[in-house]
Image: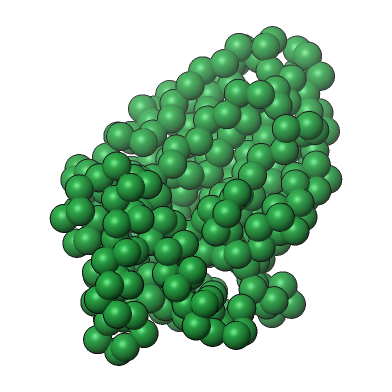
Length: 321
């Protein structure tokens, strides 16, 4: 087997670590965990809460693999063990904002590979078939953010300042932005309307979330409400949004596991270099992530829109990982 892995922090000067964690046990296990960025910016003994969550989940996954339970247990039970590990780490570190992470796992099970995923970290098989869950709440945030960015970039000369101001509006919420004078009532209404159109949801549902901002998003984690989503966050896991697939090894020639820092997936090539070339193409085409490649955040001169991680494995037939 040939394995390549690349992980890059969102911080271009590399002064801070990212929140992604890679787990590799050759012939047994490949996985990527994408910890949620701590919106407070807090660090705990040099680590963000997102990185702590991702690392705790990775360690729990390794223990499950060693015990054989990663093969035999139900997907919900597996992800609950990971969620419990995140909870324990949060208690131990006295983390203020609820930490969370995604997980995308491929484990060898005899003549098959088992694919397990929760969250928007994706798995691609043979360069074609993609397993990735997209959250409706992100569609709402992204559409509102693009609307707000269009408003603020028209009022601010510095593009980095416009991006950071937009992030603050979407994080703190539209109500706070109106109260501080950053947006008008009409601006806020336009952002809500954009979200409603993009997500095909009701104005009330979109407005309730956007007025409070992403700082309130943890209330939707593992919730069955319309904008709810499965999350490894120390709480009870919901099954909606979980991937659990068995694939015959004889049919698998390549495996790619990627975090959502790659806004676009390469159509030609299955190696790290191909993913990085696609990343650079996207940065050149839509730096602010408001056009062809919409995202919850845009890039600045100091930061990419997110941490990015890609793990690639090319498999000779009749072998393990």
